[in-house]
Image (tube, rainbow, N blue to C red):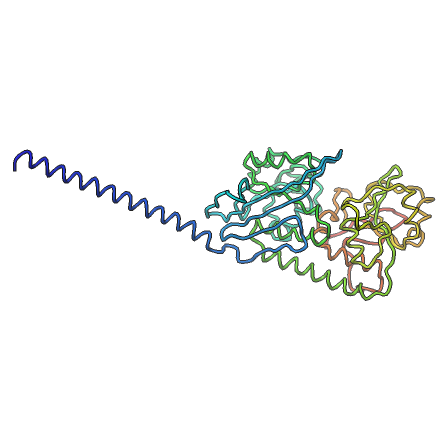
Length: 421
């Protein structure tokens, strides 16, 4: 064969090899694309969350399920502690099952925050958050709390020893991001109630701390607050457990309300405490007033059409006496806030004279400044309702043992330190 023929053959072979290589590359690439596409499709089509949470009483969060991820939306109106500034805060979270692909953040997911689940290292900045996690069996996943006033001795001791971090309580200060980073937090459940601290949410996320807002404080009904256990469960894939726990609470409330409804009379009552300097904090529209209503009590200061004020509303002694002096029952409330005023004022109150006085700090550890009213009472409102009914309707619930509330002792003016359940 001559030189030209040989060159021709070699060129043809080279061409075949090149074409073959290109076809093989394209085939492999196509297969890889199909595999990737198939993997995403399989992940989105598989139902990783067979148990679903559906909030009924809670009005400030929603959730929808999409195979390997959940879309969680929260909303609340934030107000500044000082001044009249307020702003509607809306947030969208995409909770993605670990090891599966996240969806594209387009459409309604534009700007959403992605959080891998289930969370393993969790930080919180409120006592009730600790208890929601405890009820879900995730107390050992807590790596940081607000501070040193946990009612749970184990958590408080861990915070004291440095075994878990302290990031500051939500009502008093923004979170300490350095502690969150040091503790390698993979979920910060941030109770956000102050407009002044709104920037902390964005800051945490900018630093790579997966942060989810908690707005249970904005709920109008105590069952709405308690139902936030389902929200916490979303980050743990513990919906089945949360549904069962809340169903028991809801059923207990229903049973108690049925017994109360059969009572022929509704006693009058007030719920409020002394804050010092002739200033009382009285509940007019709050979760406490909902408890009073469901306990068959007439709140003489009730204002159903007014604004929600879960922390109560200020009132002078003159205003208190004007309408409250004939109330049959008095839940004297936050009795560690300030020393009570002179007996001359208190004796003008019928409930004080007759001794139909109650407090809500039975489970208290004053030396530690720890009060379970701010923790488990939020999680177990059915027990609070049962306490209130037993105290104000002595013939009802004879077998119920008081948990969070008790008779107020006028001689000591403070509750005796309580024990564990």
